[in-house]
Length: 151
Image (cartoon, rainbow, N blue to C red; front, side, top):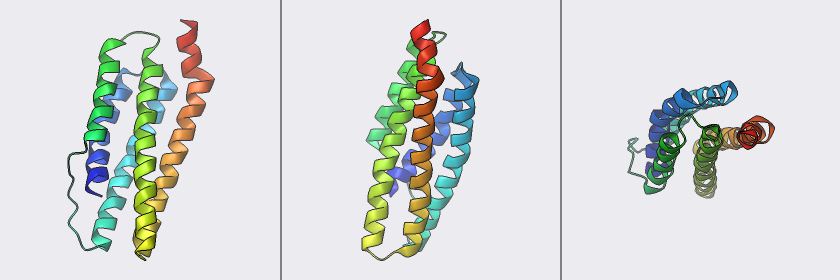
C-alpha cells in the first residue's frame, strides 16, 4: 500500500511533464485524462488506508522511480524527435503495467482478508488502469507508432 501510494503521488507529478512535451494532441489528452484519474486513485487509496485503520503514508518505491527516470531520459534524448511520443507512450505503459500488477495483488489480498470496502475501491482503480493501458495501446497502434515509423 505504501509503495503504490508513493507511486501514484510520483505519477501525479510526472504526468504534466509528459503532457507538456508530447507532440500528439491525442497523447496530451490521454495524459491529462489519466492525471485526473490518478488524483482519484490517490483518494481511493486514502480510503483503503482508512478502511484498515492506517494513516496514508508513502514509502519510496524503487520500481516507479526507475520507470519515471526512464521516462525522463526519453524526454531528454528524444525531445523534438518524431520518436518522442512513441517513447513517452511506452514509458506510460510501463507505469500502467506496474500499477495493474500492484492493484491486482492488493485487491486479492484485501479479498482474502474480507476487506470488502478495500476490495471495491481497489477494483475500481484496477479497472481504470486496465482501461488506460488499453487506450494507450490503441493510441500507439493507430497513430503514435505510425507517425514515428513514417519519420
